[in-house]
Length: 114
Image 1: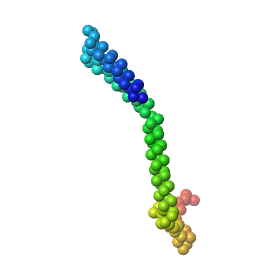
Image 2 (image 1 turned 90 degrees about the vertical axis):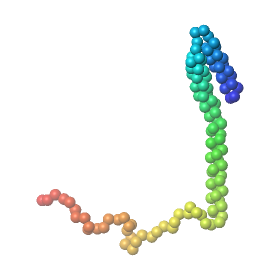
Image 3 (image 1 turned 180 degrees about the horizontal axis):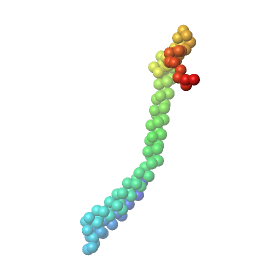
Image 4 (image 1 turned 60 degrees about the horizontal axis):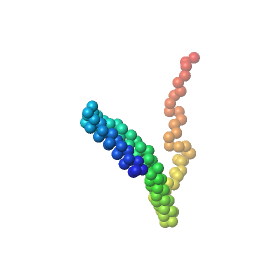
């Protein structure tokens, strides 16, 4: 990867020097040449060529996090005191209905008059 980067920078630097040294060229033209033919495409190529390394690094980090989580779960199973254990279920009230149930008869029905 670094060989491609060094070669690309060398070629674009030589293009910029040729632009600046030309009788019809200018320093501004050399800077634009170096930026548009060198730095911009090179940044895209570096990003694309670095994708496999980023994926390997992300995969290794996720694997380490998963193994740490599994070790924590096994440790909490072994001691019997799980910090994230769900609370025991609560029994309904004596009427057998949930607390959010509507009360019967509190709202009069609305209908058309005969």
